[in-house]
Image (cartoon, rainbow, N blue to C red; front, side, top):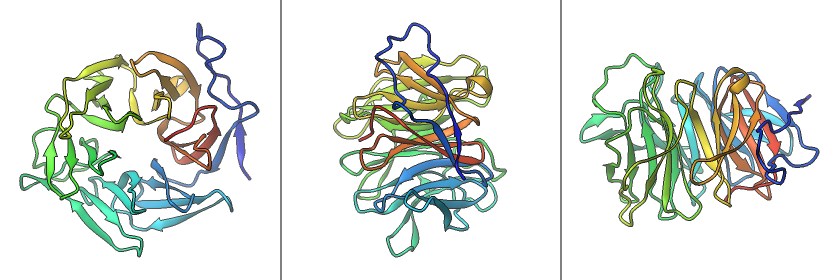
Length: 302
């Protein structure tokens, strides 16, 4: 049975027309048997795939309401995305069983490495990714957990070009986490989220140059010492939809393209990531705590 939770958008001084939850919609709990859920992505089959960082990739089928294991073990996957050929691209992190690579799962189920190092040194712990219209993959490489020896002395965002070459595209991130590209393809949004509250905890933006390199960093929203953004997605109209905060402040944060907070939707568990899915792309799937949730919105994804 699906548990339901009804919440209001609790943001003072926001015009009443700026509402994001569809009329009559409630947050539904779809599955709650994970260890730590992350990285939801809609597949070409209409199912929603997500990581259970206990070391599985799970698949939720909206038609049946069932959740099953898709990859077990999963290489400690975190962020997931499907490319334009319907293949699953995954960030495999550190810790026991982690691949510390970007992997690709072919349609026949075979898994191979797309990239596992930069200049001969293994990645720290690939965390999240996004893919641009040219098929270039941008991914973050922080290190939050895992005792494996680090080979890179920086935590950066990288780009994998269609020819397989890997480029470091940031030199000013302290611990990049979630990331997403604006609908017009000209801006890369990144969550720079340090483990130490004294470090950077902000939503930042970089202009994307024609060659895939990035321009000057701009801080759009500073979370101060609070838990900032883990994962995020973006709507067709450019609204950044992000998972951030904990406890009463844990939920979905809606930001305008310039970083202005537009609304807040609390979630039953501390949220980790989200994605748009469904026929009209207006259903938001949320990984939070040990669970998978969904809610219908008035805005839709790409």
